[in-house]
Image (tube, rainbow over all chains, first blue to last red; front, side, top):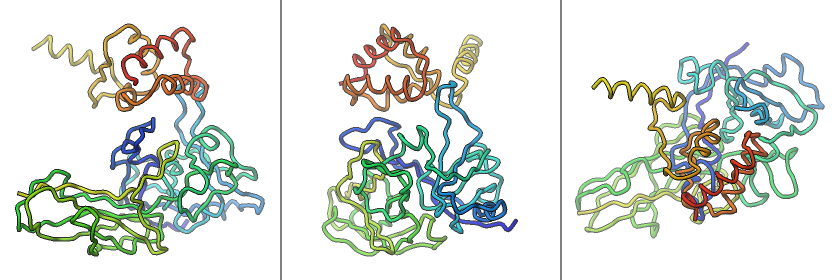
Length: 285
Length: 93
């Protein structure tokens, strides 16, 4: 079968949950529940073509080799809509960054769903099934859901909608300052380079702006190498602090369909989609 | 030194799933044995520490009910009560 590659961000739906106020129970992630890698495998579409996907199919359902601790623990089974399954970039991958998938990254084969949160990226895939009805089960019906209408999302998973909520799908636009670290001491007049990464659901990062005065004014950062629309996009911005004291540096990204980051947290019961503008405080002496 | 090495080996055997992490030590108090015995069979006790002290009594009750009803944890009603009391007293608000 023909092979395909994509550089794509895999981010936990609940990345930054630990920053929610008020507190949302769950794994209290900071900023780091994500990664970006080059994935190689075969297109799911080619596999489905090979077996002959019927028109009645609405979802493709995946199971992996893991199981619950007890018999009563619901097995982790996830589906995606056929429209996402047949995208050119949706892969069954067997390599990560040119090497066989490491065990904890899903060896020997895993699903790659670029633009969508990690919950769909089934590891250790053992079964792929076409379904004519919405897949039910704890991990579809109860978990990984967001309120309807709260987030500016384009890609939807409508066969799983209820009156109250909808499955989480694509990632929201986001960025992170990776240097300098919060609390770094810098000298007046010294050159400071702000570096970081920006990403979205695959519409492509349009611009990253940096503020060196706590969000009062913003200036365009320089974007780094474009590794594809689903990849981390690096950015950098240099300046020299002019006065002593605390100076807050912030970054905000926007994408090619005009989406940006939020300045006010969008509350939701499971603590998903945190993309509040990130800032670091510098200690200028 | 020998006693120290034996202790390390004992710790490694007691916490095989978290061999590279520090064992989590919750507050020694009545009920801790039930928390360790029931909860750590499925997940790290880190989850208690990382969510503390925000959960109120109702949330701890809901979390325990979720473990039993949604995830099928085989926790007896008696133990569930002891666990709830322990968590509310030491890791709640």
